Each structure stands twice: as structure tokens, then as C-alpha cells.
Image 1 (cartoon, rainbow, N blue to C red):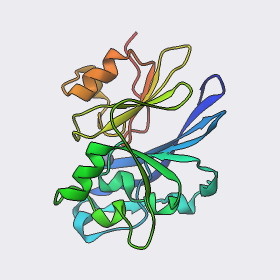
Image 2 (image 1 turned 135 degrees about the vertical axis):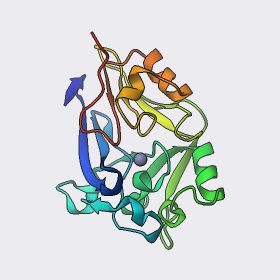
Image 3 (image 1 turned 180 degrees about the vertical axis):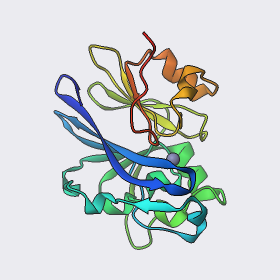
Length: 206
Ligand SMILES: [Zn+2]
């Protein structure tokens, strides 16, 4: 989808959590100054999440040149958002420092070996608060789903586009925002909000 100033956002379906009937999407931002991948899905199954019955369409088996990705953003580090990080060894991965600390230190937070794959060098760039990634593209902390969650905000002529990760899992949550992160998204007056587990973006009521 072309938004403005040559920036496009493309949702990529990387699997499903069949056990809870939710698709998993990552989002590719093509910007004149670089290509950004927001979240990485997952590439394998794991006993710790067998009850969610993940079905896989990993990035490594799609028509996407992984080497064309200049930077990766993790909205947060739950397993279904960082399970493809190992495909991007050496590529900078922007994540809030709080999120990285929690994922590395708290038990049962995520699948830790997907955050720090053995033998691979995950080039995390810990971010403290708001951060401008590219002109018109910034990272904004959005606590709620996790305390270290962040969203990606893309400025356009028609209001910002937001890539929300799991700050809202269901579109209806943005109609009646409850968490700090959800209220922040609404306060931005976005034209469009992409979510990790919804096929269609949320749009404000006219
Ligand atoms: Zn998720």
C-alpha cells in the first residue's frame, strides 16, 4: 500500500497461531532511505508454545530478499515477533531497552534462544524512548501488551500510519482504548493502524 512520499507498507503473512485462530503478520516499510522490517514472525515450532499450534510460512521461504532489509524493528520480543531474528544476523535490530532486558531476564517471557540465537550475533540496538529511524519514521514506546512495547509511526499527508505490533491484538481494542499504548495510538489520530494479528488495518470511524 502506497502512503505518501514514496513510502509503502506491505503486510507479510508469516504464519498462524491455529490454536487461537490468529494470523501472524510482519510489516515491510519501503522508504527512499531504506527498507525496514517490523517484527520477524517465527520459523519453527517449539514445545513451549505447542498449545498455540503455530503454522509456519517463514520469511526465509517467501519471495523476499532477506539481504535487502536494512534494519529490523521488534515491537516486542514475544516468540511470534522475534522468531525470525536469526535470519538477520548482523542487521541492526531496534528494540526498546526495557523490552530487551525483560526478555533476557524474566522467565517464561518468550523463547529466549529466539531472542539470542546460539552462535549468531543479534545486533540489537537498545532504544530508550522515542527514536527517529528514518525521516518521517519514528519508534514510540507504547506500554500495555508488554511494558517495553513500541510502535512505529510513519508521518504522511493524511495523518500518521501506525504499525502497532500487539499494542492492539483485535481491532475493537482501538475503538475503546484501555492501555497507555492504545490511548497513545488514538491520540496520534492515525489514518491507519496495522496490527500483527489482523488481516486488515484499523481505520478511525468517519
Ligand atoms: Zn503476537
